[in-house]
Image (cartoon, rainbow, N blue to C red; front, top):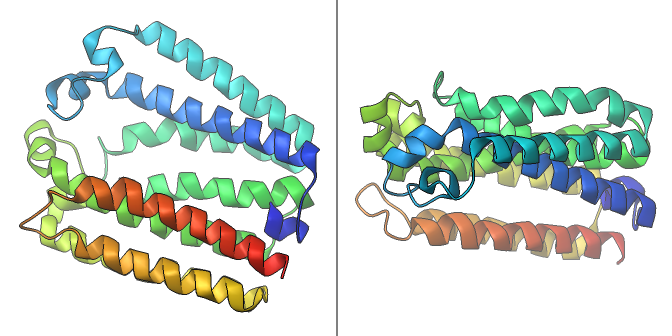
Length: 256
């Protein structure tokens, strides 16, 4: 949003983009929990979730997904015609991603592509059109998400093989998955560097970029094929820092 607007996009856009984000996120997570409830009950890591424990019924979760999808569609309608036209396609990815791990080991990139819709959506919400920076951000987010989803999938490799689920670790092994994750995060760094060259954002942006690259390197230093004990730190903490630092770098570059 701030890149497309060259600064603050206005409260109206911020409100409806935030509503769209909340609706999309809740739709995707609700559908995911319903689709995965059987395997979640079998996996010790996820068996304590609400659906396997019977705290929430599948029908209740699907109702939440339906309401959340309506929030997304209304928000898209309030933003501009292109947002509304593309919203059903976004909904297809938001609800369809959950099935991909049953079909293909490329599910990591499908998840990344789905999350990357948010970057393009934020741009379109402001401008009502596509542009090169939006597509570049979409690509950078795709490989960033895929990279740390590859790391996360390493902890379930034995379960995935036992229950016929597909992932890069399941298909090619943990060492290969870690190597592919590193390659994806190298592409993330390259994409964010290209963004800084496409839209001159000054020194503060590049300071943030170097911090992000350092965190990506640190993230991969936390895990190895023989030791995944610090995976949650790499997955949750480090990527949270990366997101906040990147936003701060962009905002600082725009308001320098």
